[in-house]
Image (cartoon, rainbow, N blue to C red; front, side, top):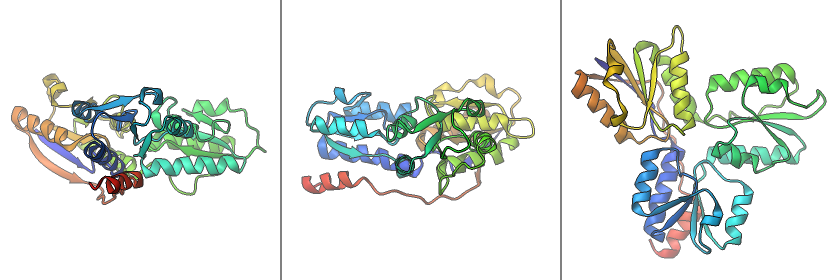
Length: 317
């Protein structure tokens, strides 16, 4: 069986930065270290930090006064920052810079009087944080059908922004519906969907037709990982069956009946060692022959948060 290993796959620059931030904070501050929301949406990453003494919370009220708190890669609202400040917390912001860019766009357009259409999934951590920047100005749009129900008129100033981890195809369908109804809609100055999301989707779109089955390594609550499975299943000409797995233990041998080739990829929050364990299982159990398929080269990286570097300097670490 041919095992096609997609590249790029796995960790993006924002996830790398966020994970390194928590690793360094543990060394500097010690444990318990508090992190607001899962640092990234991957079960193995989160469980690994919990074993080290990291405490993940869904409310700042769960963080003791004067403790150190790390904000996750998905970003937080100004209200969360204010609550942490009022509790005397030392804040380390591991928000992905590409998410911060969307926050700044939302804030700027709200100040300019625009009605902001935020294309994304209601309830996702990133969307909650972005809405918090200008709650009175933002309307979440989850589908083309939502556009028909929008209350704005043709004379209202409108701009759209997008969640960074959306399917490019889904986002474009919604954007088309918005443009059809509001031809005057303003577009963001640059693309909001992040480079890593776009590249991983492009690789799956190009490589999935060469495989009989696609394995996406990632967790169920990872938006970009779920999107990869959907793209595989909807890629022309006929779509390729796809499975989302957290690790090698979730692989079902029955999936491979009659399968001659498998594409393996990973969401932006999935560690590479989990990918390699799955590849090894396919090699051992199905005489897999690994072939690397590079679609796009990546060299993006982000600096660790300034607040972490200041903390490291003051502690002499």
